[in-house]
Length: 321
Image: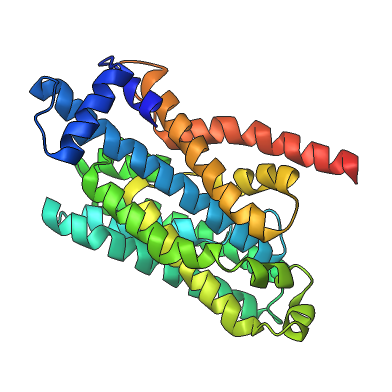
């Protein structure tokens, strides 16, 4: 994190970063000028903390959903949660709510959108027959496409002026606006929903053998599945509200970690959280530093890097089969 904070248009040394952070944590005067101290403490520190929390949370959600659906292509995007959260966030942005109102309502709207998308996915999958993993994924694809179409309709119909720029950031995924409130929202969501998901490893291992086997092992199948999916929706909604829609972290990171840790979730979940935090932190660092003075939305970087990695993982898995 400290190295990432030093990288950017305003070059900083590790000593300067350490001095500024130590001054704020201890309440002593900062050794830096007000401008450079503001760059460290008000801009880069909250941004890297937000990136780490978002990356960890998305990776946890991806691993949990892949276990619950027994489909390794599942992640918050495939089941429609991210699209629903984006729709809720965009709806708040186009209403022209004041900045203070946006800070409060955006996480709520994103969470509501994610939960509604989850309910729509489960409802549609249930209407098609038994709630199988394949039906859940197919229903998620349909709900995701529908939520994406509604988001485009809202933008086309209502967005004017600067709202286009803000909305485009949500759709592409960006941490450029991350400040301390964003870091606080992402951190609290990770504590409130991420930790219970991390502690669900034994139940997720049981789901890997199918619903009948999980029930035989003493797991309340439907109740546990609903609880874990709602926690994943809560976490996804909160993360999308501060970062927009960032793809491939929830899909690729669990796959890559599983190659090293094996399928057991006791090791997979914490390692995926760590790897997701590191991956998104450095993707965001590349997004803001690789093409200075222009900054790319980090969602573009994760897509460019994630697509070939995912293709390579699929090819390796096929060669091993």
